[in-house]
Structure formats: structure tokens, C-alpha cells
Image 1 (cartoon, one colour):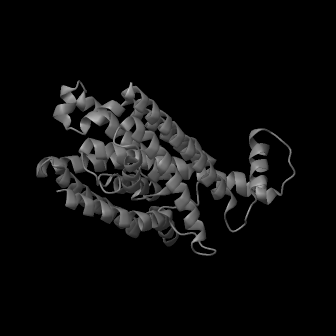
Image 2 (cartoon, rainbow, N blue to C red):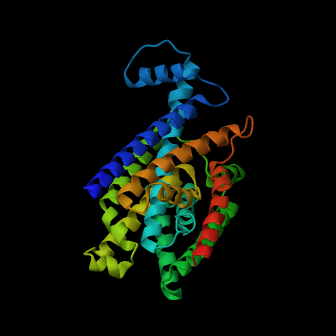
Image 3 (cartoon, rainbow, N blue to C red):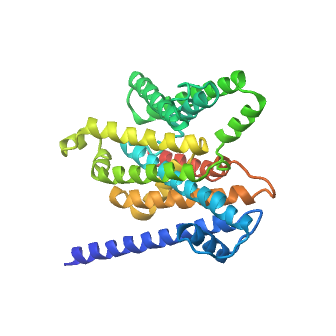
Length: 346
């Protein structure tokens, strides 16, 4: 009886936490639309969105209407979906590799996606048949395969996989710098380098139509494999003993990770630490069970990225700071804390 009451209490607590997180995300998106060089009241924001979605005819300044709908709202939605995607990637990689430091940025997947996107952007790889997202996806897959080969040769311990990821990341960053230095003109070089630090200045509704479906699809696929992710916490042998099709699940989840990372990198550049910090924060709040951890992580990543985007626009007057710089300012101290805790637990 007490066990049933305890489960009922935990279920209601999870529902309440989810509602609070969704409300907080809505508030953050509203703030992202309202805050900027031109302050826009919330009532104006609501009317501008209503005019475009519901066909109402509120009289608004055309500049305000354009800023709300064409610039800030689309930017906030891309930030939310990108944050959710990167955070989910971190959860999956940490569970699959059984390493608290695993995330796309550390493992070199983001760097590989950046190299693939730059090859399409500057070298014209694919002769117009390959999109920026397609190039980023190919780069992410190549980076992951390279890290996998290096890890197989060095030993499959989680620590060595992380070291191989760092080596792969440096390699692809060097390739990206070489391509930009040797093949891009001055204007292209400035644009690419700013984009590689994480920039949402150029995102529009076409990016929303890609980022949101990718984030939702990735989330549902991860949630479908929540039991398998729980099983991987005990190792691949234990997962196989529990009836998990280890190889199939690994291919599917690593493919989903590469797809979500590539989609984010192709739109906003390489952004680090989101996939590292948010899963640990969510795990501290809701526990290790992936049925609870995945939704908490997705919402937390979305909230954090929208917050980082707001900070990037207001921290320096009349200047936009690359969002990757903001996430690193928060992520680097968290990274140090995780390393310190991991050392103490040994």
C-alpha cells in the first residue's frame, strides 16, 4: 500500500515538474521575443503572433510585426529545439558510453559536422546536390566512425573513448581552419568563423521547419529506447542479458545522435557544453531513470539555450555575442565540477 502511494506521489511530482518546466520555457521564449535593441511589449508580441497564426487584424507597426515574427520568434524556437537536441545527445552518449563526460562536442561529432558543413559552404561539395545539413550529417558520421576506429585500437574503455574524441575534435577543427584559410575569401572567412562559434543571427522559419521536427523525432526515438538506455548503464553484456538487441540499438541511437547534432550545427554552428551540463542537472533533479530523464533533459536544454540566446544579445550593448561563448562561460565551470566529483568518486 505504501509502495503504491509512493509511486503515485512520484508520478504527480513528475507531472508538476513538467508543467513548471513547460511554463518556464514559454516565459523564456516570450522574454526572447520581447528583449532586444527594440523593446517590444508582451501585448504587441501576442497580437503579432495572432495576426500571423489566426489571421486577426490587430493594427501594429510593421517593423514590430516583422521583428516579432520574422526574426525573434523563429530565433527563439530554433534555440529551444537546438538546446533540446544537444541535451538529448548528451544523455544518449553518456548512457551508451557509460561516461559522464560524453557529449557531441567532446567526442568530436560537432567538429566533424562543422567540417562537413564548411566543405559544402566553401568548397561546394556535392555540386549543389548536397545541402548544408546533408554535409554536416556526413561529417558527423565520419567523425564518429573515426573516433570509433581510434577507440577500438586504443582500447574500448570510456576514458580512452573520450581521449580519442578530443583527438578527433582537434583533427576536424584543424581541417575546418585549413579549408577556411586556403579557400575562403575575407568575407566568407569572417562569416564562417563567427558561425562556428555559434550564431543564431541568420536563422529564419525555414530553419524552424527543420530543427523542430528533428528535435521531436529524436526525442520520441530516444524515449522509445528509454529501457535500453537504462540497461546500458550496467554495460553491454548486462543489456544483452536483459533482452536488448545491443548492436541494433547502438546503430539507431548513434545515428539519431549524429542526425540531431548535424541539424543543429548546420543551422547555428558548433555549440559546446549543452549536452554535458544539462543531463547532469536533470539527473540531479529527476534521477537516473531515462523515462523521466529524457523529458527533463529536453526541456532543460531548450530553456538553457533560449536563456543563453537572450544573454548573448544583451550582455554587450549594441553587439551580439556568439552563443557558443555564452554556453562555454556556463559550461566550463560545470565541466570542472564534474571532473572534480568524478575524481572524488574514484
